[in-house]
Length: 377
Image (tube, rainbow, N blue to C red; front, side):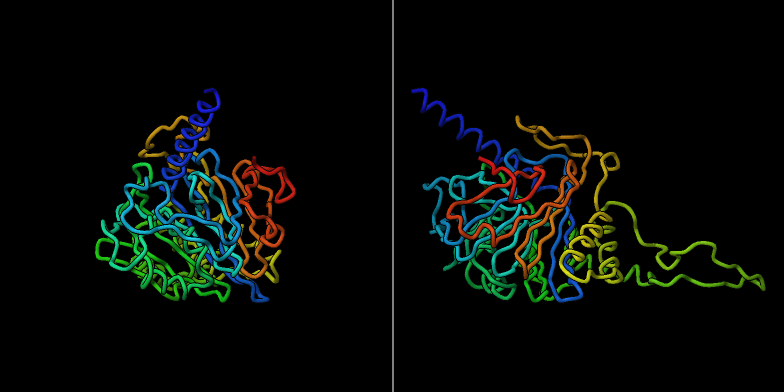
């Protein structure tokens, strides 16, 4: 009797944590791909919100793990087959919140495909029904499915256009409003958005993504900032009087410094264009963390306007959006790096060190070290 009660409590705790994970998917975030001078491809993201689910960790998932593209849904509610088995091992930040499916905010697989989901408030809209002959996929599970099944962005496009169908099917009553960015080891990036007018897959993008509006809007908005450049503006003459610059950086006048999604997109786009690339992986990872800090939220400047549902385990819930963690990954080496607000030391976990594991492995998000630290039980 006591054992049954203990199992029931664990089941209820997992459900609460899963709900928190889904609620935290509505955080404002920024993502960016970059390359090093020696040709390595990196991908980084900030996770910006006022909360993070208990049980969120650095998560390794081995190849051939079974999962469900409609995870967490009762069997009697499923009308189409949704059971799958992964092809590739993957690592990222997420958790084992559902008994049948791992969930990621972002991650990378052993083939070097990297990507993540970002909040797409007011714009995301998914079909109610699955397209004929396709596998239904919940928005919350798409990232997991892609990382476990696809080796590059071309395969992601084929999967979305020919084999799967995003559906408006809730997990624990929630359907997340997100869009996705993926980058492969060749440096090719795509953005995926499901809107009211259907599925949009933007190929060969500039490798930048934030939140709403849609990618096409952000891309055109860059035209409002074409005057930004590296070089300072020089001496100007006004009615015969010469005015000489007394400070540097005048070429960047007009670069937005606020924390809105459009401003973060513009800021990262110009940082990527003009930023000095790292010579190698170590140098590149360090520089990309610095880049992402330019789009990070410090606590206090963005009061949460819609706090959302208060869950029992909201231990970190604060009245401000802030950058809870930043992750950076390298397609060629399979190394996953991260920092957190509480611990700015760069930690690392490598797919190569975890390949022999037959079961998922979790590493504590706020731990001191990477793979060498105590694993989460």
